Image (cartoon, rainbow, N blue to C red; front, top):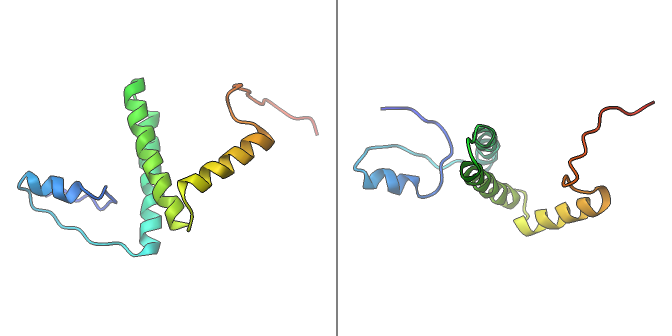
Length: 107
């Protein structure tokens, strides 16, 4: 039986069960949950980096966004608050749409 030891989406046990497979799970405490969400974010970012096409890239970005929703809640906030902060930062410092690549700054 393969060992996964990773955070999975809420319906994964139900999906595994519907395939008549045996499995084991446990519920994480808050500290473990945040740690595992952070690990999962790296996993999903790596999958995004390796995406072969736009469709796969969007799938992985959706996974990253789901993790961002969960992390915002862990920090007592919401994705709407994260978006508000993003907008404030974009107003002050800009976004990344102009594709500016900084090479150096003279001291």
